[in-house]
Structure formats: structure tokens, C-alpha cells
Image (tube, rainbow, N blue to C red; front, side):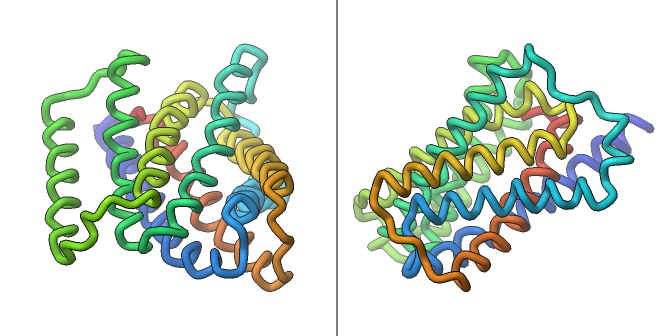
Amino acid sequence: PVRMNAKIGATALALLAAVLYAFNMPFSKLLLGEVGPAMMASFLYLGAGVGIGLVYLLGANRRAAREDKLAREDTPYVIAMIVLDIIAPILLMLGLQNASAANASLLNNFEIVATSVVALVVFKEAVSKRFWAAIALITLASMLLSFEDVSSFQFSHGSVFVLAAAICWGFENNFTRKISSKNTYQIVTLKGIFSGLGSGIVALIRGEPFPQMQFVMFALLLGFFAYGLSIFLYVRAQKELGA
């Protein structure tokens, strides 16, 4: 019963993480008219890292003290996580520039398939027949939803960028899984701040202009909810459910 209750709780956290992440596509699509793709990725992750860091400082540190902190042997996974979190959101924002938010959301479901394949092939995580059936149903549902507009099947570079982002996040989810037993606040804060700074450097290299402050604030707020809280809940769910 204890094990079952833990799985139910972790499932609820994973579902809530998905709900929060759902805000990302439509609002990012709106902001991309005013904010460059790499700059947007930077603000989203900085909002996540700074926001969760503040939550930790404002009182969560006492509860988090019981969790193990990241150690030296975790460094390769942390670096891989951060690098992939620099690449993936930039690819997603580039894709959103040339695809609708609805289509990008459907295409981003490929992250589920990528995560599962990497977990099975690279990290030897057990994947049941029931789980593969669930993946097939999700893929079929995405295809059926896409039939509403036949033109959505036209080849576009935006779709390629979104799928590439999903593959990057598939690998990143598995690297994060390797450290998910450690302090969640520390993981999300490091992921957010360093991935955000990395994307910011890419934005400067690309020559993207700095947007108006109201758009910056909105992007940071969106990042806190759609990335920060979502990633936090997802990492907590991974402890029990796996990647």
C-alpha cells in the first residue's frame, strides 16, 4: 500500500508538471514576435532557475535539507543536462517561429518516445508492454488530432526544429533521472540559471536585440511556471516513476 500510494502521488506530480508545461507553447508563440528565439529560451530558463532558487531561500531550504546534495560524481550528468537544456529550447523557439503553437505541442509529444527509447537502449531502464501500448496510443492520438487540417502535414523546417528539440529533451530527461534522487531545488536552480546564461550567450552571438522590459518580465514569469515549477514536479515524479 505504501508503494502504491507513492506511485499515485508521483503520477499526480507528473500530470501537474505536464499541465504547467502546457502554458509554454501558446504564450511563447505570442512573445516570439517581440523576443528573439535564443533570448526567449534564456529568459524562460532564467525565470525557472531564479524563481525556484528564491522559493528555496524563502523557506523551502529547511525541508530540502534532508535531501542529498549533488556530488562530484554527478558532474557529467549535470553538464549534459545543462548543455542539452541550452540546445533544446532554442530549437523549440526556432520551430515555433515557423509552426503553430498547436502543431508544435503535438510534435513535442515525440519527447515521450525519445525519452523512452533512450531509457531502454542507453540506460537499460525497464519498459513494460503496457508502457509501449501507452506510447502507441499517445502517438496515434497526436496523428488523429492532426487530421483536422490536412495542410498541417506539409513539410516545414519548423517541424524539424521541434522534433530535434524533443530528441534533445529525451536525452536530457534521462540524464536528469540519474540525479533525481538528489536535492530537487539544487537541480532546478542549476539547470535554470546555467542553461539560461548559455542561451543568453547564444542570443548575443546571434545578434538578437534585447527586448522591452515588459516582455522580459512576462518571459521570466512564464519560465517560472512552465519550466521551473514544471521541471521541479517532474524531477520529483522521476524519483518514483523513472524517466
